Amino acid sequence: MLEVKDVNQFYGGSHILRDVSLSAPIGACSVVLGRNGVGKTTLLKCLMGILPIKSGQILLDGLDISKLSPEQRVRAGLAYVPQGRDIFSTLTVEENILIGMAKFKGAKTKKVPEHLYEIFPVLDEMKHRRGGDLSGGQQQQLAIARALASEPSVLILDEPTEGIQPSIIKDIGRVIRKLADGGNMSIVLVEQFYDFAEELADRYTVMARGQVIAQGSGVEMPEKGIRDLVAI
Image: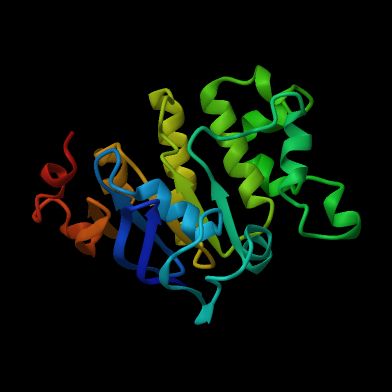
């Protein structure tokens, strides 16, 4: 389980995250929602160690990982799919995925696990093509496959539906649901597309002005009026 306890973070004199707390249990999709600029991406960067926290704790299975480097957090079990995907456009699909296996050693780093191609068949078809030749939706699938290649216990996704065609959004949603239901992974999903978030959420957290303003079970989202809280 990933737990965030009273995390604060600043940019200069601006208080960006204000005592943010949430938990992401194994076997569940924990959705973080909020309008643009409320600190969602900043929170994810703090989870990964890309940005330091000023105070609070980030716990993985009860162990404080707040001071670990991004590489150490990946080795501990975190994987991050950033907004914008950040794939390597000049490398092949296969090479991109293999980069996600860098924490391993030996023969395991030489071959893409077949189950990743089973999850995203289009990547198998295009494994020898350069990442930059893929469509936006295919690149998003590649970014998720690269993250999964590290065999994470926590998968962190920052707006995976952004700029993606509806058919691939449905495919990505099915993959996220299957991963959560597998029972051996926590999913933390930051999402602007409310319908996608509601469909997948086992738990939800709503942020505004850097702080948590609502939390609960995903099934409560319609009755609690969460759509109105995050409407732009």
